[in-house]
Length: 126
Image (tube, rainbow, N blue to C red):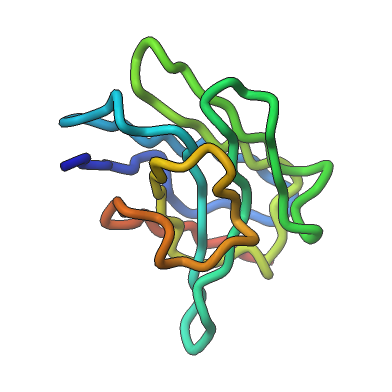
């Protein structure tokens, strides 16, 4: 069992920045890929970014390319999502997820992500 806890959400004006953190505990050696997802009210959960354990296989949603950066500190079992140039469309609850399979990324079905955090709210105002 892997537990994930997100932090770093908050309210920011458009154009601002936030950094989300995701701390993993439990059977962390089973984690291969970590990802960030978001869900806005009335919308489906969508993938934002994912990164394999080796840091090579990184995938971003088209809407955040060039603005968001995912990173991992494997030694500290923590993943980060640096969000710059935030837009009102980025307002959502952001979730951290972990997968055991190396090939997992945000384009794969959600059921492949075996652990989820409780989410952290990000609100971007104009």
